[in-house]
Amino acid sequence: MPEIQISEETLERLDGLQRDGESHDELINELINIYEAGERTLAHGGDHVGSE
Image (tube, rainbow, N blue to C red; front, side, top):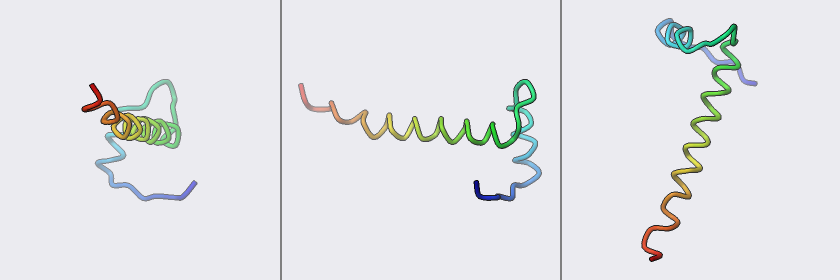
């Protein structure tokens, strides 16, 4: 996984989102998965518009 640098403010926000000893890497991977799932939903959401 690539290494990234984040601001202190972002680190504090990540700390606020962590659950049950979850690492920053685990949390960031989960957030990326949620983002990607949302992108797929948006990409397929318009497939049915106007097909009535």
